[in-house]
Length: 103
Image (cartoon, rainbow, N blue to C red; front, top):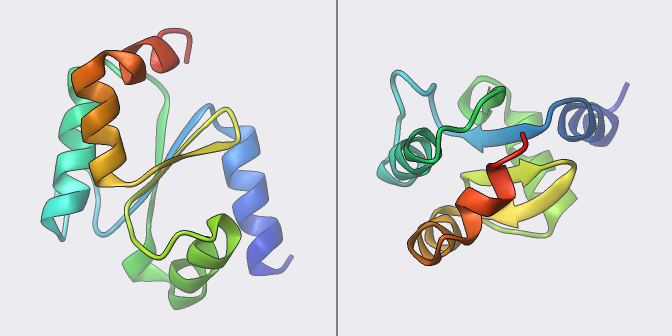
């Protein structure tokens, strides 16, 4: 399985996927920490995380897959949602909570 296939499998078999630097318990950058905090505040259940620092191919592959240059990246039900800034905006507007209600 190539990197694109691996990513596609991850985002389609898990309802909520966060590609981040580090882990939810030990994020390795402020943007990843922000994303984890927002998802936690939303009560996101079934959160599947991928530490891109553990696999350089995934780290680059997710950027190519989404055509988005930065990490973290959130996927809900296979759809790319965005990075830290977008999650912050969606959380503040209440849109993210609605999106995650039935995860």
